[in-house]
Image (cartoon, rainbow, N blue to C red):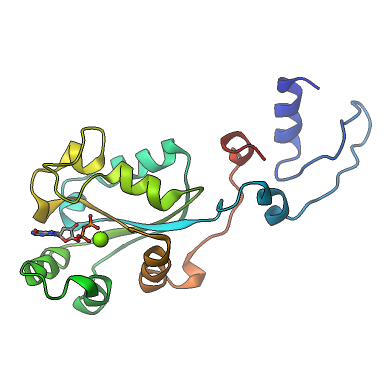
Length: 195
Ligand code: IDP
Ligand code: MG
């Protein structure tokens, strides 16, 4: 079966996998495999990370640009909300930085306006999104990264990205309830990954 036929077959029976070549013009026997089973070829496809556009990014109307980068890269959006973060959530989020001299300014900055919190899913998403976001200090962030393209000073660096898989899990459960995350089938999943 050629590539085009495979694409047509996949668009006709989205979310399904056929075992064996289909015979055209006849009802297609379909064997439905559980999503997690056929995703099992590549471990870590369901890795998730927390990305947040900080108040300066929201004020500067950069939300769409940040989302666009993650969509175009191929990651899957599974959670999204605009909220005014309070000190409670931020003190937990930045717990490790509580003794830093800039901590109080950081909390002030993060409560100065709304934040757009997102959960993105995909293979190696934590590491890849850190690379897409760039170094903490925009002066060291490479052009092409969010911080390297849109920010100048470390105190206003536009976006947050979790720094490890463990941190991501903790941050996601801090910012989102489990019923705010949507587990959905991406129609281009099989094109993005070799499944
Ligand atoms: P990260 O956001 O790249 O993970 P962290 O070291 O976790 O960097 O710091 C969290 C946030 O604290 C940074 O994104 C930045 O907004 C702020 N921050 C870090 N270092 C400084 C600083 O030296 N001065 C002011 N703000 C800082
Ligand atoms: Mg950090």
